[in-house]
Amino acid sequence: MKGQSWFPLIGVTFGFCAVYFSKYTLSPMFAPYLSIAVLAALDAICGGIRAALEGKFTDGIFITGFIINTVLAALLAWIGDKIGVDIVLAAVVMLGGRIFLNLSLIRRLLLTKATS
Image 1: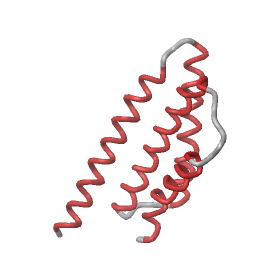
Image 2: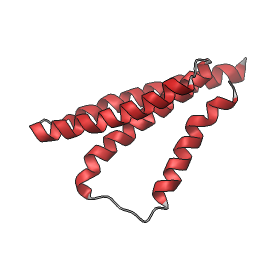
Image 3: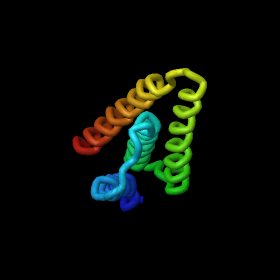
Image 4: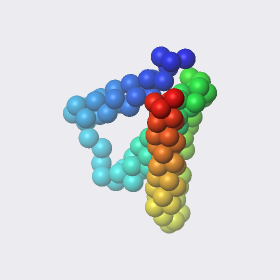
């Protein structure tokens, strides 16, 4: 179980390097959808790290949650754009709040383990 806690960090590092060093670019038209998808992915990664620190991490739940949440967030942003509702701002606020909550719990878990 201990070795699995590094999967989210390895995945985000690999994904960042693959995109950063890639020669391909996307149209600016996709920026709102991609930004929401990235936030959803970061939320899933923070949740995976938190679950690993709590001893509740499961590969299948993390991978399916990561993929489904990322695709669903981008899809909802696209649908909102098509019907004229700015869902992107609401999603940024919601996902940002979840990321900060997970980061605060990760910090608390790490400090608790370090002091005990």
